[in-house]
Image (cartoon, rainbow, N blue to C red; front, side, top):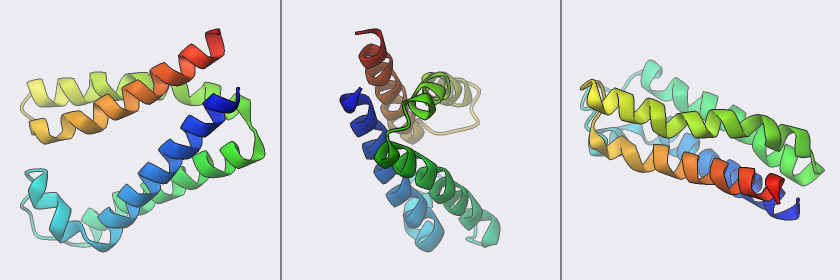
Length: 116
């Protein structure tokens, strides 16, 4: 279970950094993702929401909350599926694929740790 808590902590840190970047520097990262719209408050809000959920990941890992780790697996498995659907539908660029893959691999690692 210790490995599961480590992956939850690492994912929390990764998503916290991503959230901070989206909140503070959206004008830098959004064009890389193919989003060239003007930066406004609505472009920064997903960064804040991501930071909030990252806090839950990090706190649960440090407190040893295995139940929370279990709850994250279905959503993390869904991420590559949703990203792929968005790309195929033409609603997102292929630059989003690594984010979906990273989420899915993290969920797979946690699932493996639980079934061991």
